[in-house]
Length: 470
Image (cartoon, rainbow, N blue to C red; front, side, top):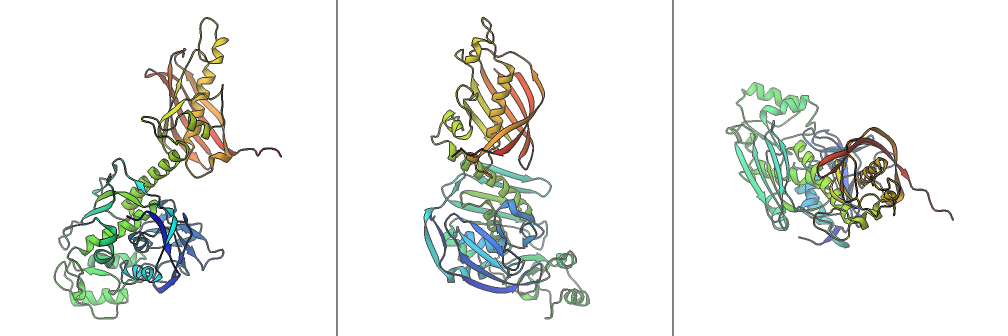
């Protein structure tokens, strides 16, 4: 696999009709600087809004993956993104003067050809791979979808499809070497649908630009000639239409591979996984994937990536069983001796849960007066340690923590169940209840030896850190 980022050498353009919207569009691929990522740009809208190609900007998954920001939309992005991922391009601007890329022949090959024509430029910055170091799983029992990412030294993807339709049956395929296999074995595999779906898709406002030249239609039922003619006229298909054998493309169109539908599903998944925003090192195994499940899985993996990125930024030395040590905590929190009341973070699940530890020593200053001869940790300081741990949970990578402070706005339903003494180890557990804009609510609990000693609901807000005078 490549180790440095790359973009293209020069702009290249192509024009055509969008598959679902049926609108005309000219798309231009342009070079982009290091660490820019992949962004779509709507040049036909005032201000030319940019839409980053990541799961945070997915706004629709009806028979394709639509990205949006504000009122700007780009439909059916998956084939373009599959070409970008397949060619291992990290940084790219995709200009469009319409809302949907040209569909070409329904595969990624037209985009691959254009990007190859543009040539590649190796950049100085290293690729930022996400290394899958633990199994990641997504399931949708209702639809029979199961996607797993497993640790491996390179990128691999295996796909199985089963539509419970005898016209297609079960198919599987796998890509194990992106550089060698993507272009000759997957890039040309075309989008497809069943004959019984065609009229429904058009009635749903989709495939307005669909033709027999940019999609494979698989015959899964027999139709009399007059019914076939009626559907063809409704879809605006001008050429004559005839059925082949059951399970074969209509009009006798040849498949490039016997399992071309499964290969196209793998292609779709490659494009959707680009929305993680970083290349992977791991083995993806997917049963019955589709755009909705691909995007949900990409959200899970992107969250892991953002979490690892945050940890790497603050925790410079890897320690077994520790997410953030006290040195890292001082990079995150503004508190210092004698008011830093958490020693380490041992569990951190982005925007979900955090576990911090405070070792309570007799040397704590407050024990001198609280109380002489009967040292008890003040309840307000237990709440403060809980709150500081919660402040770390607010790390989400969306803001520069160095320029922010966390202020607590409210403490509700605080209860103190047991006293805390020198020699105890406090374990703070906080879970995110809600987060809106800059305000969040967390449930906090503190334990000693597994026994609950304190609980409270905390409300906090993120504010700008005051600038130093002068």
